Image 1 (tube, one colour):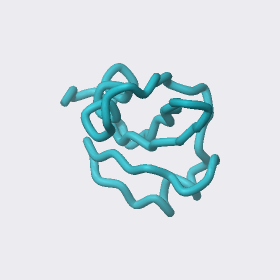
Image 2 (cartoon, rainbow, N blue to C red; image 1 turned 120 degrees about the vertical axis):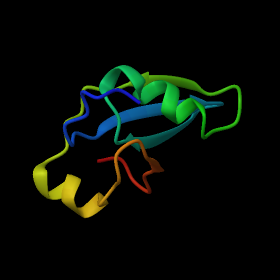
Image 3 (cartoon, rainbow, N blue to C red; image 1 turned 90 degrees about the vertical axis):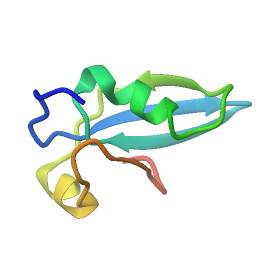
Length: 75
């Protein structure tokens, strides 16, 4: 992806049929929604959130650059 990744993790919401999921994307913010879209079934509405993870939360996720992960619970 882009070279401006600086270790941040961006949160994306995915909603469909009244269900909401939260996804973490270790990508530049401009690519976060597309990175999640590539991992889920069609029909989900995606949006980049304004939620900021703490340094501790980022460390606990232990994500590699350009990876995406579904979160169990909302941050």
